[in-house]
Image (cartoon, rainbow, N blue to C red; front, side, top):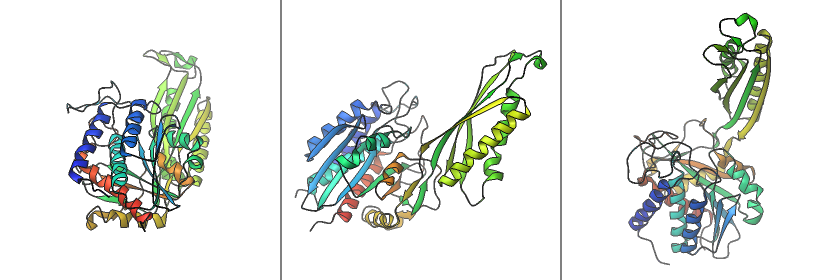
Length: 387
């Protein structure tokens, strides 16, 4: 079969990535992105391209030989509601939306892998290319699964990549077991009686209680969970109905919690309820807690992590393939797929000088595209070896 010129593919992927970066779309709004992806997959000659999976998701299928096993590769497509800073030519043309997490790069390198495998083959079986919407708010994978992803496009295992600022270009990291945390969201509402700021005794205001509650929530991790468990509880918003000379009668405290085991998540919720009710009672207020689980923990399969390392060593320098030293307290929608099939999620370097993820100055480093596309192709060829 013909071989692609790697430099030409790199140039092509860079062009795709920058086009996607300039036209970002929020979760479940990725209509232009999905159409672009589907058109490219058809251009590459895939056997089947299906749009609208889980809303705006795209699934491409490529078959070679007679193998009856299937491997899935996943990329996310959505952007964030952040106003981009910087003046590079491919900056966002959509006001208030930008690719601040590198999903433009993830999409481009999976498209590169699709073109590489469609052109060169080198495997025996089926590859499913999953382009997922709405990863950022943890709904896209569930939407695709609810839409019959596994039944309509069955596969035996799944792999995904994410760029990592601070990690040098050409480096690859993952680990067995817990790799990324669950994310729970919470909202605590305190209710009392607002009053004039000059006459606090005539009401039963909530702001002092809310401040005490925020402080109390910090004891969940430090004093109420086992030190052996990794967890984070972060208050991110405190909203009231007061104004400069009005003591508020309602306060809303919002935030998120991270953990790696369902038992820890349950204990965080339980302790949060105890603290909220105890604080409210001590200030003669009422309290309600609304607690939701948005992302589940991402747990990599032990055997497939070793397979991923072996595939990575054919693409990255051997010394640049390493075990991640500890789990990450960030969350990833990819974890939902692992409830159905085993898989492995890994990080590749975006450069030591890269701006952080979800930062208005972030930009995906195009130098990592060849590594991502190369890994995707390598894991397929390793897991679906040609006769």
